[in-house]
Amino acid sequence: MNIDEILFKYEAALKIIKTKIEIIYNELNNNNDYNCIEHIKTRLKTKESIFNKLEEDGYDITEENIQNKLHDIAGIRVICSFLKDINRVEELIKNDKDITIVNRKDYIKHPKESCYRALHLIVKVPINLLDKKETVDVEIQIKTIAMDMWASLEHKILYKNKKYINEETKEFIKQFSKTTKKIDEIMEEMIIESNNYHTEEETNNEKLKIIEEAPMLKYELARKQLQEKMEAIYYELSTKDELNPIEHIKSRIKKPKRIVQKLQRLNYDVTVENMNNHIHDLVGIRIVCSFLSDLEQIKDIIENDDSIQIIKRKNYIDNPKPSGYRSYHYNAIIPVKMINKIEYVETEIQIRTIAMDMWANLEHKICYRKSGNIPDSMKKRLRQISETVNQIDITLDETINKKTHDNVKVLKP
Image 1: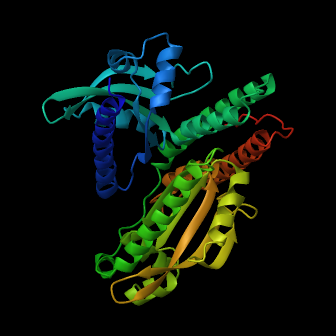
Image 2 (image 1 turned 90 degrees about the vertical axis):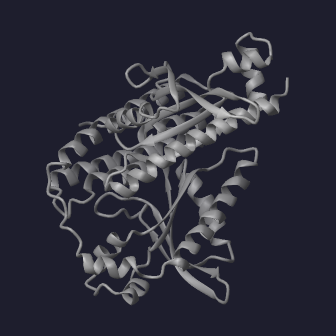
Image 3 (image 1 turned 180 degrees about the horizontal axis):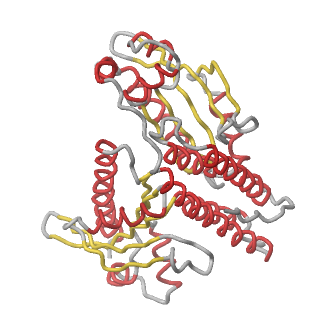
């Protein structure tokens, strides 16, 4: 048995599924103002974890048992915004004629004993090898941001406390699950309600064309450079014995439509010069951490990087925006090496916890395209949820650092 050859097949199948879902993501991004997919994560079990799993289940370590008894060697996680989005993603996967769903487990309607919630699909993926065609199992997990937040943090809490999990910690994890479930339900109600409000006016096409035709190469290179730098940090932290404090990294260049709207909001004429001089977050990267205490570690790494010139700090964690938004922001200049010159590009670096990121993403989609038409009652509810999310962060941090804590309160509707 050649385990490397077996893993190669699973890796190939995982790449195929990832590409398919990335195509769905990009198509939704390009053709829709609303994308139901937040982000995608993949993983391939290691040789050690495969062997351990077979032994735990009482099976011999053979090629046949690896392929027939283990169905989650290759796994992909699709993170959605709202509960309704899970059904949408499942339908899009069902519509792909290349793959076949062979098993479906709904842990949303029927959570695991641990309180874990997600929709799991086992799919058969055809792969073309040099001399034959095979099908390989891949597990697809579809879940909301809140479900993913719970699963990730529950794993880290248990990992940190694996030697002495007491009843109080177990009860806290269950209570935490109830809170995230309630947030999912309330956010689902709010996104449906927000669809009743007027959307923004269409952007002037002539003004949009000015920005669409603007040279953006230096900004795209700055985004790639910053993304690669942060991914290198993520990789290095992953090689250490301790848990990686970074959950995921996301970068973007502001879309032309949003640039036009921001210039107008700031009372500037829509010109390329004003875009370059007055939009300070054309390039943005978001570093999402697990716990509050992780933020300081990432901040130290950024502040000690000689290639990043920090020009401004904004602490929206200690001083949240009126909307309830929390995050730590840097405005920073990074040098971008081009063929004949070096360009110095301003970027925005956001550092936040996974709980803050959950709230910010959902708030953005609820208020997205509503052009100030969201009523005060809904804004108030969003601020209340922000306070609950903040309490989750504080309590999680106390738990992970083994301090005394009160259980997180279930969010009231």
